[in-house]
Length: 279
Image 1 (cartoon, one colour):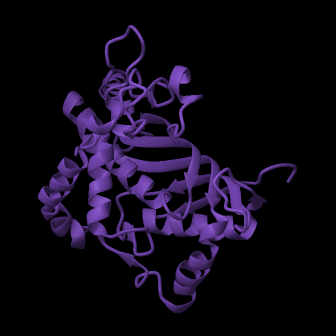
Image 2 (cartoon, rainbow, N blue to C red):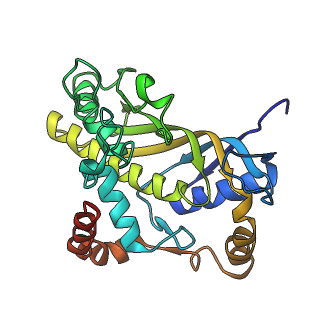
Image 3 (cartoon, rainbow, N blue to C red):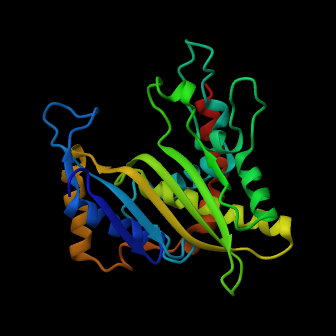
């Protein structure tokens, strides 16, 4: 291909689709240097990637090789879907404020622009789909052109787009998400897991607004730059590819349903951790 490869994978569940994406990227991605490389780091594996998850709520949802444990996954899901860290975002008007540039929840549920009141884009998206399920305008964005072109760590997730279709069956919510940059090995699984749970919440909200059940449909995850950093290659080869050779898919994954209670019970500890971050 003339330029960065465009790769496409599918999977029946999140764990399978993420695993397939890493296998495809490792095999067919191009070699690209990054702005974060140390002098002796090899180039990253990089591609434009389209990942289709046929049923994002199907088990097994969790892959054992994602970075972290069940409590970390619960924390990230609460960060994206519930905004538990929105208050830790820096004040852009204060040059001495060194907190985070953004959270995805803040950008999606409380998007702020000069001279405008904060906009809950997800609620707006839900209402648009409740009124016209076929609309092509139900989207939420994160990019702030007046801030993000110059900030140190701009948002990677760029947009969320949804549509409800029936095709003779039950009304079903499909969701597309687009990332400008996505760390395939260390971040993408948690991104997919949290955003699939956001998709579930959007479907529930539209169901509430329309008084009819909206089912969760396919999830499409698109990344302009889907990459494995060269500094991760040794771990990736030993841990991820090693597990492919030695373990079955069932042994490489976990059911979210089996971990849900334990993850929910971690909420108080997670909130205490977030509270400590304020200091």
